[in-house]
Image (cartoon, rainbow, N blue to C red; front, side, top):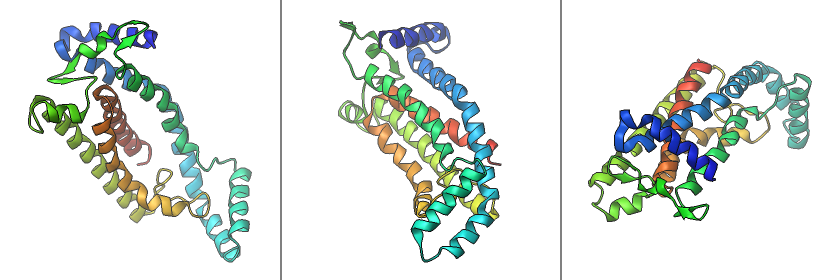
Length: 238
């Protein structure tokens, strides 16, 4: 973890002339963008896979009619169809899974007071008036909702809500137009997956809860990555 801490510190030093006291926060945003760039090829592959799955929907519909009374046969038939066409049913989940290590690194880095036996200097950094190691509960206890730190969180909540609304509207429009949707937004690679797809647009709003309970540094990662995903999907699934 000390290696990762050094990386964040170096990025912060490079950005300090531009962002001053918020340089570490800017470094986290840059780090998040670099992670997303690394997994972007997988996101493009997932989009291609989704279009391939969309092309299979007429065949999947036929299988549903054929095995309407036998869910187990339907499940096997759908999976066999995807295997024959060399389409991975849940490949769209891979980019998100690969980002988890970076998120947990930030979470632990800004949750510990020491790194390698030394004091964690990153905890002294702030985003405007909010400490990067603090949480929303800390902000509420230090100035309240409209205090300096509280306003930082309100801004992050507003960004998450705006992105979630954008995702919800885009998903509904694509569903109405019959276009290919990201996995979980209407595609049903296995029986029962559509039920998950119906609630997925609303789950974006739950990101607000994550932002509220994790250290601000990890919250910045979540907000940046969520915003990136919204823009990326709008481009790849247009």
